[in-house]
Length: 432
Image (tube, rainbow, N blue to C red; front, side):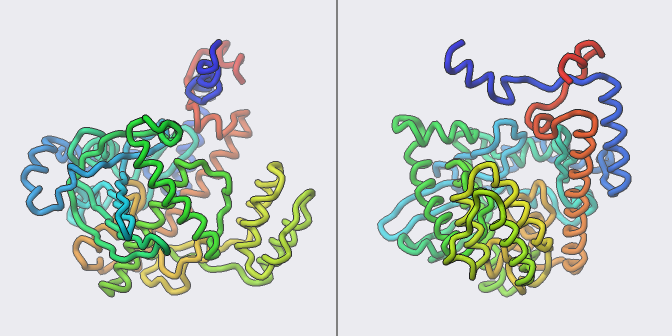
């Protein structure tokens, strides 16, 4: 077996799906239905919603040709997406340029509100669901996949409607010099997986190498700056491709909510994360300090977030999960609110909200509509509460389903990465 074949065999794709029996498959289905009823999660879409979504996926190009004069034409701008290998839809893309005094970073998000608006059946359904629910091997979508995977997917070599956040960043401080948010038409040049993005960074002769190298340089600096400013980073060993996407999306989310708060003075769906009490933080830090082989640097105790960051970077790998869990136990739940008061403690942002995932989060969909209309839904407070509550339900549902998978002898992570395939009883017993 060659090195390449060995590497492929070690991946989830190379291992293939986990084989389970028909009985176990029915058992899993029954458990999901039980959980959906418990948490009031709707699995099937109403017929009217599916019909509406299907009608909108007709002649995309004619729709774009009719609207191009009312949008920024960014079709010539070098643009690409980076997603997991098994992603079904691509709802965010990036572009980057370095100029004499600034970096210009464009984050393009699928313009979902072109299709989903308050008068539509899909909007009402999105409010009902409030988010996409991800269970290992099973997804309950917020919006019909027929829409998300077609006109709202920024596939390469196809013109698509986008909502673009254009950020001009000071070269030294990386602060926003200007922020512009507008409707656009883009054409992605390529769809990269995270692995392919890593390869492009390695190979100077590869297409998009320079763009990926430049945006990684920027993202890495933004990441280090965030840590220096006191942002909590619970995953210190994230690869370069993930760093690019995480930092660019954080920068865009922050830009949008700053624009809404300071430039427009309108309410929005802000993400507010309260801080633990001093006693709770002390308890977490003491629990971390007591772990074998772990020591919190003495000069960081005054700022618990910096203390955790510094400890995670030096701690033995076997203790990372325990450190993360000690922190998560004392963290209050973040909520959506119509006022950013209190800010986002974990990120250490005074103002923060979500914008970059309108296909899977109600908060982002609402913020797209507010940016577009410069107007706030009358029911904003109720929408904030619903999104917060349904997110809590989704997380609890996921936890209980993972526990159940372990009880029946399945590894939730393996199910998530590889999926399952139903085979006859004798074959299934060989793999379990």
